[in-house]
Image 1 (cartoon, rainbow, N blue to C red):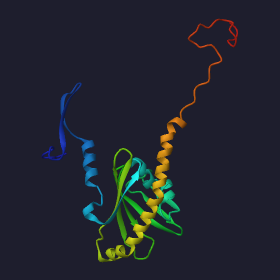
Image 2 (cartoon, one colour; image 1 turned 45 degrees about the horizontal axis):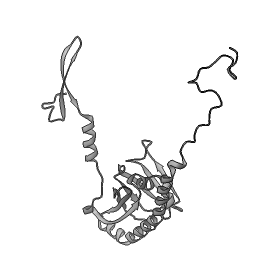
Image 3 (cartoon, one colour; image 1 turned 180 degrees about the vertical axis):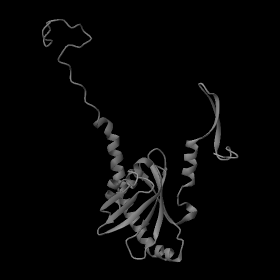
Image 4 (tube, rainbow, N blue to C red; image 1 turned 135 degrees about the vertical axis):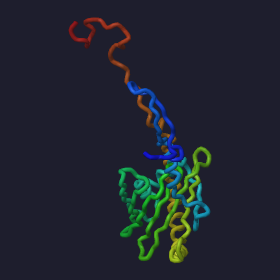
Length: 232
């Protein structure tokens, strides 16, 4: 590979003995570490210092449950303000980074693209509102556990990069905030109902007892000529 310094290139020395050849020295790459480095390098998260504005609420349920209601199309239509359908295009066949959605509001649709996907920590989307001249808005939803059965949700909108974007957010920001609050008001009782159903689930869904056997238990001897055994 013509590497002057394999260690500096992130490779690790490796040696093993191969039959008929003997000791062989090679260099290997730790793919798990490389994957972690790539994941960290490509993080897209609107942090507190990067936010134009934010909304923070505490919701019932663990982050995994709140995440499901925020990211699954079938859940989103249950509570998001004005949403009648959520249509997905997932290039990899799985929801995650690169997935594009049409969040349908009647005859209009908000176009979304997932920029970062970290279950159940956060996700970041870039959204385009259905109005002439609207800039794309980047938003992160952050999910933090609060005790055993509650989640702090923080939604942050990225700071605008141009004067046009700022003017749009100044005008449209209060509408976004009202939409978000209306959705949260509908989401809370849905989460509470889901938690109540799950709490009652194990007893309600337990397998019924097996019926008592009408034949002899096999741990007892089986004798030729017993009823139901057929010919000896």
